[in-house]
Image 1 (spheres, helix red, strand yellow):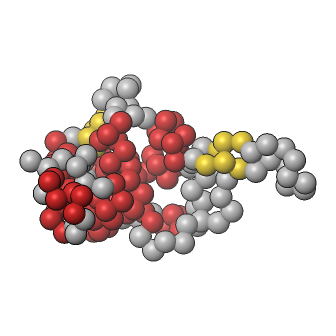
Image 2 (cartoon, helix red, strand yellow):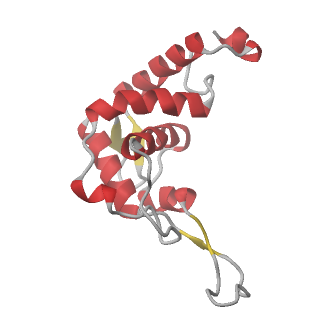
Length: 151
């Protein structure tokens, strides 16, 4: 039986994003929102919402129970120090909590993620089945000889 840990993460997220694109609706404000304080512009990818949702679903499955604050830290980046001379050291900046929270709420409405008290969110049985089925599809399509033993 193939699990989400057997498939390469980038291939799994690509395939999962295609499936979630039909199930999740991108809010109207999403095309104007930055993904963090360290960004200058909103994302330019057409399927950004579905890709971030797929990535969050995988992250909740591997690290759960996990909350919005910790996910925001993991998806954050670094912002430069001083703008004028670049002499101040870079500082970490969290990702947009509103984007993460909204996607997690949509995944909850779809029945893929559920809350576990005050600990955070975990993947439900349907979410785990979606991830494992998608991982199986990914491994069938791969032409990488080093992964043949997992197929």
